Every structure is written in structure tokens, then in C-alpha cells.
Image (cartoon, rainbow, N blue to C red; front, top):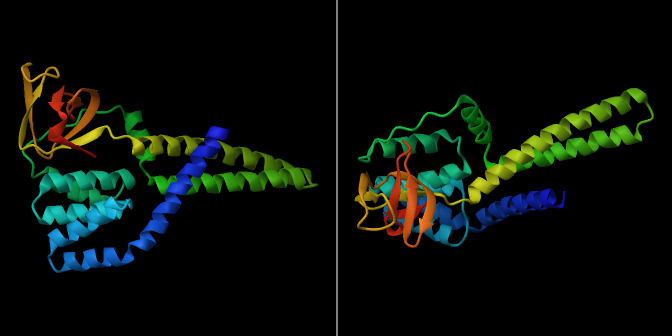
Amino acid sequence: MMMKAKYIVLLFLVLGSFYSQAQDFTAELSQAELSYSESKYDTAALIYQSILDEGYHSSELYYNLGNCYFKLNEIPSAILNYERALKFDPNNDNIQYNLNLCNSLIPDRIDKMPELFFIQWYKGLYNYFPIDVWAKIIIALLVLFSVFMLLYFLSSKMFLRKMGFWAAMLFLLFFVFSFFLTTQKYASFKKHNQAIIFTPSITVKSSPAKNSVDLFVVHEGTKVFIMDQVGNWKKIKIQNGSIGWVETENMVII
């Protein structure tokens, strides 16, 4: 229970910091929006990046930065920032649309491996809300559980006591399930096991050595999944399941 409480407190401290920091950067965000509207995309990108460097992160900020890079025709950087935006808000149609558009402009066309239906269902539920919304849901469920438990303990009528008990158990069940999803999503959010290739063309190797066998070629803008690391080499997997090694300098972590 202590670990659960720590997770809840941590999630909402993070959430609270997002909102407080957003207040601090109102002037900078307005200036960036004005620069973007005036087609000064490089200036807007610099302002958005400076806000990120100050420690404020949000889906809107990464999305807007991605839009700047798209206008500047820097497609790998646009993809990187759209992917970062999706970590905050994975069900956002605008982010997904722009990301798909950018992916249609890069050389590699990699088909995803098919997933089992229950994995698709779980991911759909898992990504249905952003992490801050899931955190709010678990707090609301905890409050409802407490209210109905108070009804159970304090009511003098048997009907109300029964209703309070079973309603509390139902909300407790929802709380446990939502808490599990939220902690899993938070753990995934904190992981940095995906990256975007930033080298125009790179040959993926069979082992972490330059003289090892060439396996296949990937180009800038391609998303890869990081599986392992040996020195300055990372073992990667692309979306069709192909695996190999590339040097770290060729990618930027999402």
C-alpha cells in the first residue's frame, strides 16, 4: 500500500507541476504562436525548444515544435517531436495525422507486424486517456470508494449499508484496474526505448562492430525500438521485426 500511495503522490506532483509551469511560460508561448503565424518557423522552434530546455513538457508543446520543423522541411525532427507528443496524448488525432503525413515522406516504408486482438484491445484501453486523465480517474474512484465505505459504516439502515458495501467494492475494483493501467502507462512514459534515425542512410549490422555483416539499410526519420546496448552500439528492432545493431550517434531518443 505504501508503494501505491507513493505512485499516486508522484503522479499528481508531476501533473501539478505541468500546470504550474504552463503558467510561467504564457508570454513565451504567445510569442512562439505569433512567430509561427508570421511564418517565422525557425524563431518559433527556438522559443519552443527553450521552453523545453527549462523543463516544461506537454503534448501541445511537442506538437507545435513538430509543426515548426515540418514547415522547415526537417522531417526527422518533426517525426521525433510528434512521437514525443504522442507519449503525452496517444489518442490525439491531429498528432497522429501529422505523424502519418511525415512518415509518408521518408524513404522507408515498413509494415507493422500484426498483433493479437487482445493486445490491440489492451493498447486501445491503455491509450484511451492521457496519463494525467488516468491519474484523475484513479483519485475520483478512490474518493467514491471512501464515500460508499462511510455510508456502509455510518448508516443505521441495512439497505443503505448493503448498497454502500457493494458499491464500495465495485469502485475499489475499478480503482485497482485503473491504478494498474496508470502505473503501467507512467512506467512506459518514463522509458526511453524508442528512437528516430537521423542519419540520411545507415547500414544495420549483425553485431556491434563495424566489420560485422550488413543486414539491411534504414534511412532518416525511421522509428526504431531499442532492445540492448553494448558500448556505443544499440541493438534495434524496426516495425517489421527485423533486428540489428547501429551506432548510437545515428539516432535521437524519443
